[in-house]
Image 1 (spheres, one colour):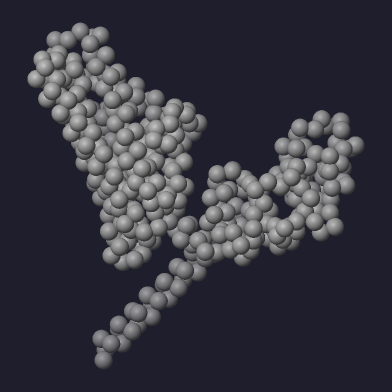
Image 2 (cartoon, one colour; image 1 turned 30 degrees about the horizontal axis):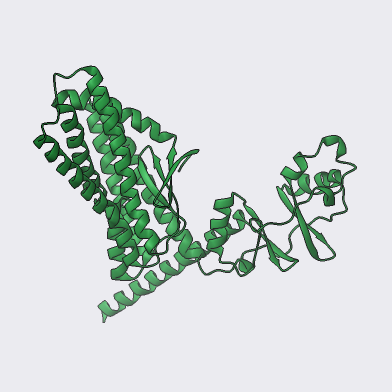
Length: 395
């Protein structure tokens, strides 16, 4: 979802980061407020005043969004859910969690915390507006405070729409999950509603473009595309998590991996292994013992004229926790490790013995087969139920 993040600061123990795409949103918001919204509601001010109001209001919205996500992150931490960071991007913000809630109650409270914070922040700005009006503050101050009070209430209400992955969709998923006891079913229903809501926003965006509001229409169109895509991806992520959870990696790994000896030269490694098997990393095994790993990065650091005279033992590295795992490790944890480290090929070890290798392709192939089998079982069950219903009707 994100490109290169810009770390900003830490707040309440959480890293706050900015995706480059949010800068586009900041410019659009500032320009819209300074050139359209504030001049319409507060005529007669200077251009400098309008642009100052736009910049301050955009910064206030920036802080409000961070507080919204901080609400999610704080409650998530209370439920033991690890939060990597809070990232702002072009379509808003997200508290990046390394794990999903394990119970409906946790899902509900984590989801509703953000809108509650936005309502409270909106109330604070409204109270400040009343105080500023009573103290005789200028139009500029009242305009910015009024905008921030209103936008926080709008942010809370919009997020409560029961369409996944919005907060309201997560609240709906928590309720359905509690009712049926099935996270997969609850996610499918809430994601379907989220997809439909995304289509509605797309249609609304097209309509706005046709009546002349090109910028507003394109904005709604893009938000609709994002909501629809995020809803579909959320359901797929749940499918992956539910399918891989509880499966030890020993059931998925390749038990006879390609290994190399520490005594061969780098030229032999390239000609006999790299070009033939196309792996980026090879385990180094001597006398049945795993003694290290050699990767393409290790090879590239060595000048080409030394390939024939240098052995693997001279450039290999120790196998780290990011490359070596236990055969009893949960397959979902393996996938998470691959995602975090961007290492799609892991060694499976017991002590100093290599017992296998697991790749991202292995995980995806297992996932595909298991989902196909489950789908076949569901269709078979539906067919049996249909025949039983027909027989009972004939009787």
